Amino acid sequence: MKYFLWLLIPILALNSCSKDKQLEKDKKIIADYILQLSLNGAVTTSSGLTYLITQEGTGAYPTSTSTVQVNYKGYLTTGAVFDESTSPVTFPLTNVIKGWQEGIPKLREGGKGMLFIPSALGYGAQAQSGIPANSVLIFEVDLLDVL
Image 1 (cartoon, rainbow, N blue to C red):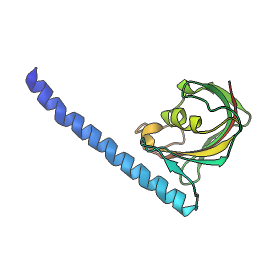
Image 2: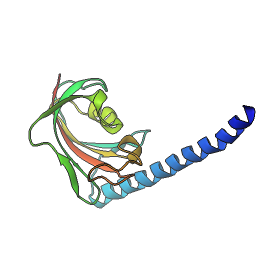
Image 3: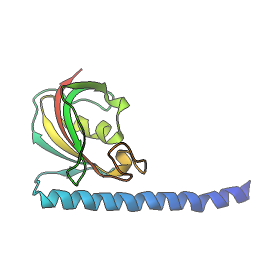
Image 4: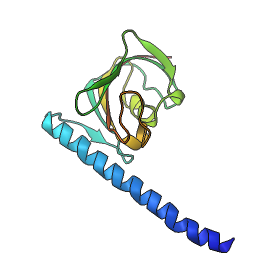
């Protein structure tokens, strides 16, 4: 059993190192994208999420467990749109990607913003319909209501 643990430690270390490398790559992609578009005022959190408030709201801030109503558009750094609401969508933040759980609470009700989500806070190494593995995701979000 003790030999198994010694074999497991390097595997865990390699996996962690790989995730760290991907996060650093994603942070650079996000920083370059923001610089290219001259988006001023973006804030990066310790997780790597970057957000930009484009319109201050006046209502309540949601928590990571709130149910919210939003309009949104999701796209890649290439500009390819992979999802977009056509009417307001309501959902609990506990049912969405980690990037939304962390990012939506940065907005106040009635506010708008952009979320630049590193792959680990999105879909990670799992490709999704229209989203390649390890993709940085960008969302424009309009927080309509905190329920």
